[in-house]
Length: 147
Length: 108
Image (cartoon, rainbow over all chains, first blue to last red; front, top):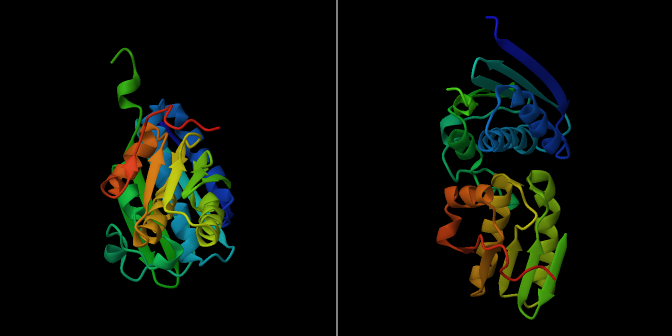
């Protein structure tokens, strides 16, 4: 696998880090020559995953969130991992408008947005251990003027 | 939070990035203003907003639920293409007017 490039980072689950983290991922994938729309898609999806970790996994306690990002050819992979309480029923959690925190004005659209803006979303979670959201997207495919 | 009250209109000027971090205080301040003033119309001005995620949807839906009980309404203005797409994806165009017009009620 010659044409791969990887990046990992870990940061505190503070809401002030949300902006920094999604921009870091967006900056990393610029090497794939993405369109503005693709950059926005990735930023939104990453933001949703991080917000979930802060609000739901850690219930606003300050712990660590990890992001692993990889680009291979024209595909980008990003995994957002937390070590929080885990999701009891992943299928239910991924239903649009389902939320466990309606009193905090959560829309229940987090996973729906991740699925809308990325090509693939896989959520793996174990109760009490945490959660990993794996996402994949083809990026920068139509951008070469010589294609 | 930047806002302006004119009669029963509350104009909220949203920040560049509307995420979980920025919506926490907007939600709180907005609700205080609704409590202290006789507001029937909330206008969210997205003129400066280039990023929004589902946290923004939550704020709009929450305010819509509150104000519609009083017979009021919510409007989103100066919405760029990206934000428009996200609002539509969440179905907000069914319950509120969304305007992309750049000069409508220009900020004073």
